[in-house]
Length: 393
Figure (cartoon, rainbow, N blue to C red):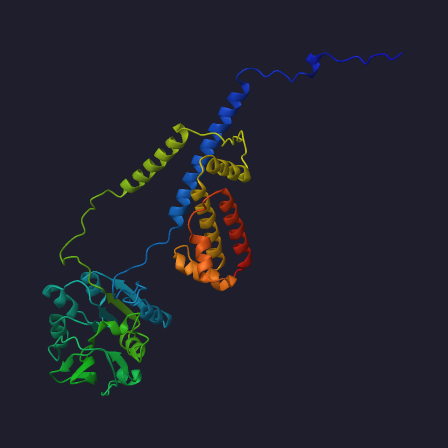
């Protein structure tokens, strides 16, 4: 006799009871914590991006900080590597104060210089290097010993043709020239058709003139002897003040900006606050739930169903057209023909690949619809045979 094994009460196997609201409360707390962590991560990432953003480089033409083809950064870097101090400014006042004896003041093309500004620059004791100067600046700096006609000649390669040591050391330069000498003490070099590209006037100080400022830019400074001439002309003194005149009047004092400087920080903080509030109060979607389809229909069953519909309605023409179109498309793909190929091209390619005459291929692929079910079955069999005879190219 077998004693039945006692069973434990079903209550002992039941899962422990969870107090109502306990799990949802923990879920809400976890969701809020995740939201705050996400917001803090976004804010931290935004701050990091702002800190790591590279400072935009200068785009001012002829500036020593501009790395584009029309800048002069390459020349300035070589000068600094040789121990020359190069300081750029856009203020005529600052340039005039820095232009003391024993230094070089380079005046690059920039904003229009008033007559008072020209007089202020010329009154300095520094050596002057003028890049494509205006007529007013050139006359004042050289006392009229050098003139130019502003004819905008073409850039050509020329030899010094003078005894200036800097020009002789350069050998040859490629530059445009429209300078000419009108008095004693002025030497014009690299002359082509009566006009020079470089001039030197010696006196209490030395004034050097480049007719074409592009000769010292990043794009052209390495051409011919341009670099040698520019380095010797600009780097004669240990300190160089590089003036690119800015669009600021001589007597103007920089006024306050239209927007206070703290406004950008306030706007940034406001944007961060809006993002955090949106993440906190916005609607949070749950996990994506996949719903299994109630019925999986096989492709073969769909094909049979369409065939029954064709048969029920006697649509042998539609069925035959579908068979022919599918066969023609597969054959065209197999032979490398584009989808836009016309029937004549398809027939010619299939005829060449299968060895059958073109009229037979045309009748199979583009012939009249079958008259009855037997003809439809025969058409399907012939199309299948044709497809088996055509192999990929």
